[in-house]
Amino acid sequence: MNNKGKRPIGKILMILAVVFFYLPILYMIIFSFNDGKSLTSFTGFSLRWYKHMLDSSDMMDALSTTFSIALLATFISTVTGTIAAIGISKSKKIVRDLMEQINNLPIMNPEIVTAIGFMLLFITFHVEKGYVTMLLAHIAFCIPYVMLSVMPKIKSLDPNLADAAMDLGATPWQALTKVVVPQITPGIVAGALIAFTMSVDDFIISYFVTGRGVKNLSIMVYTMSKRVNPSINAISTLVVVIITIVLVIINVAPTLFAKRAKRNSIGRRNVLVPAVAVVCVLAIVAGVVTYNNKKEPLPFEGQTLRIYNWGEYVGEHIIQDFQKETGATVLLENFDSNEQMYIKVANGEAYDILVPSDYMIQRLISEGYLQKLDKSKLNCMDKLDDAVKGLPYDPENEYSVPYFWGTAGIVYDKTKVDIKDLEKEGYNIFLDQKYKGDIYLYDSERDSFMMALKALGYSMNTSDESQIQEAYNWLVQCVQTMKPEIVTDEIIDNMAQGRKALGLIYSGDATYVINENENMGYYLPEGGTNQWSDAMVIPKNAKNPELAHAFINYASDYDGAYDNSSYVGYTSANKKVMKDLYGKGGEFEGIDAYIPRTDNKNDEVFEYNEETKKEISNLWSKVKIAASNTN
Image 1 (cartoon, rainbow, N blue to C red):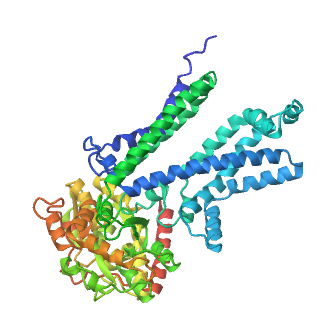
Image 2: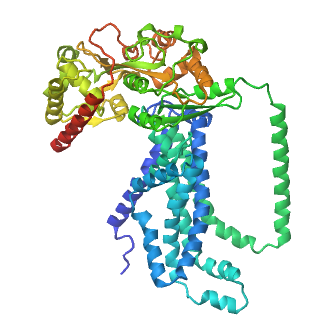
Image 3: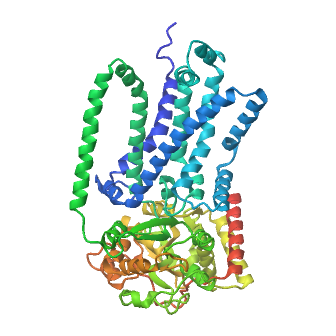
């Protein structure tokens, strides 16, 4: 009986599986041509993000690092793993079994354990972390996968094959390369592909073993903590294209090699000689162009500036423009929390500029990790808004120059939320049953407890245990009765799409949301809020403080500050930039979230208190447990 065409369910399942795997990739490719910043709303066709990708030295360096390390690690681990597998196959059974178990251990081990092990190894032997340490780690974790792929092929071979070849006059090397290796080539190729994939995909191990600004694409994406840059769609599309080309070459190459094998050596030389000539001509042309374009040396030619900043917290052009103007090389590393930044600084990692938040600056000053600024080298202070200068954590601005500032408040959908409810209830609207299941809580212990404390009429800097306990009970009541969704930066696109009625958000993110969706509003309760500030500081162990002062001036001046603020959406400390972006014709014209409130006596700046921080951190963990148990 002919069963052809009589299994529609199987075909449907196969189609659904293909759609499930490839639809996200297609979605990503389409949005790489999106004209707007949104990751979910297509506003028109544009090559904007491809241009931004190509202009971004940070992205292109990450792409280069990703593939150069993947290719080197693949080649070295494939050769090493193949030789090791062949050697083990010729060993005694007890040795072979032991080595196979040892080989399986890194594969079975959690990646985080391997990552910490590598990190401790490099620290113990005082190896400076960077490109080489990342490459060594990738080689080490790729080798077991190669061996695992090659071993079954070796076991399937006739054990006397190599001996027979040598009996017929082959040398051991010829027996290996011309007899054994061709027989196990499928296993070698499979192992190489697995190694390449593992290297390109790796994040955890890479994150722990890198340093000096070296990062791959995985690290770059992870550290986009403020907002995912739409250019990531463009660079991801480029990666898909590169990998597709690699796969095509791998599948087509055997056929091409078979055809080439029929050609004589003269034919090969006839192709090789012109190719070498072309390369030489191109090298000469490149040298002439480089020589002719040689200019006068710039003020910081050849120097390197290391910046440690939040992810996606700089403009599209500021880094490249600063490099062109000064001749310096900027190495930008990103962190996703003040605490992560603190750990690196406390462990002696040397940076020239940090951009921490208010309370963390207070801590760094008190623990002696920062150096005082040389006011004679700064020309930017008069350009900054008075409201963001002289804040409690650094009253004289001896250590810090403001970078961005703002508030934390309530973003709400005007079509769902009555403004009268907000004016009447303030933060207590998060307990209003009218909005049950339609709210976001921000996954931040500081901001969530700020909201609860302000709702109860207390200071957000209180150290009173009974008040903190009341705030904890308020938050538990919220998660148990209101069924909120606890999120971080995904609130930005979600609220831009109007997916919930309201949520707690930073003013800069609210600016973006309102700019994307006119139905959204931003409200600051009269009971007060967190008036936060992130500022540029110079660590005590900075290697290039003079260049650091130059960058602080550049980032605070009009062009640099405008580029930063217009792209990120957070409020600039430069008063003229702030006025131009908010005023008529500005990118954020009329969006109140962009202008921080400065006339409410209940607004506060966070102060650092180690004991209170630990208590709130512990209680916030309990709040999230209560939320998960409720759901």
